[in-house]
Image (cartoon, rainbow, N blue to C red; front, side):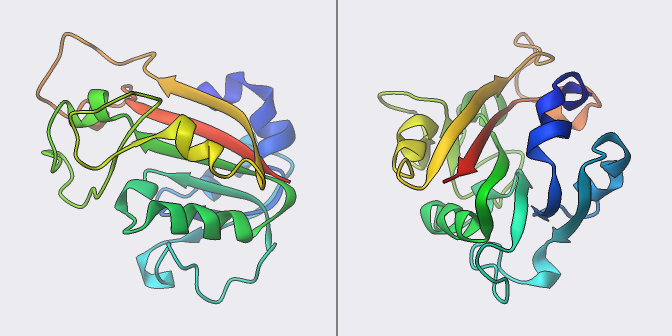
Length: 185
């Protein structure tokens, strides 16, 4: 619903042919009716191959790349993000969501809620409680020559700060993530 209130998703970000990396059964393609400029959106998950490598996918293949809660599972986050930029056409958009380390992990690593998380993410901190923390603003700055950052947002509108020790994302409303959008140069 949040994305329907922001016309940029329908008019700019999810336009043309895309790939949804790490989609599982909940692919962005299921919601194509809300994004009329989306021609196609291919799901990519474990049976398709390693999302870090995107083997068999040619460079500049997609108009958009979407990945929700996949980057934290990559062995090498920098290599994965770099590869995802490679498969994106110049001028194309990448929409990525990762869990916020304080809202989702809640001070615990390894994660109590997903044992496959290899990294935690924060918008920007001088230091973190997590030994595997990535500050997104400096991380994205490392790709400044290849991608323009269009949006970075902490998704906490429906997060209940008084409720601790539970995975709030198991409810139908709570978000505890960071969404960032870049455009490939």
